[in-house]
Image (cartoon, rainbow, N blue to C red; front, side, top):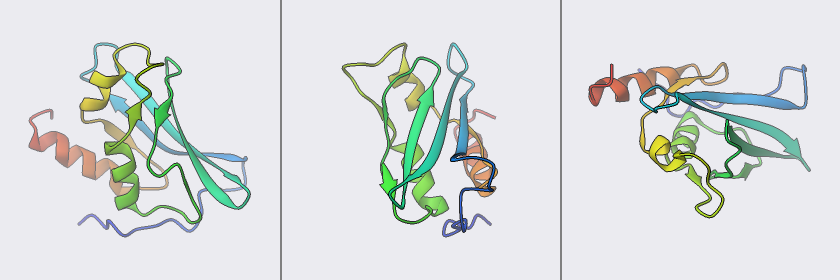
Length: 124
């Protein structure tokens, strides 16, 4: 059973100022796209940033938070991610229409959620 209310106590383990929240891989993409979502703290708030290979400006919701996100909020962030239409490179819109494979040390149930979704749509 996936706990959608799970919220890690912190994102940081003392190894640096930035933490990798999730690594997304889109295997159906022609280029095997990957997008990483990172967080850092600025003025006491967590700020989130998504980075892909092409340097697209990816918009996240929420962009920042005063507490760690619940699993449900991270799923919403991933599923509503959009590229800036004026500056987009490659076929990022097509990639974002896909269902990713997800890896996250901080959100262990995230992988199960997207695996089940991929199974439901016949991708596994």
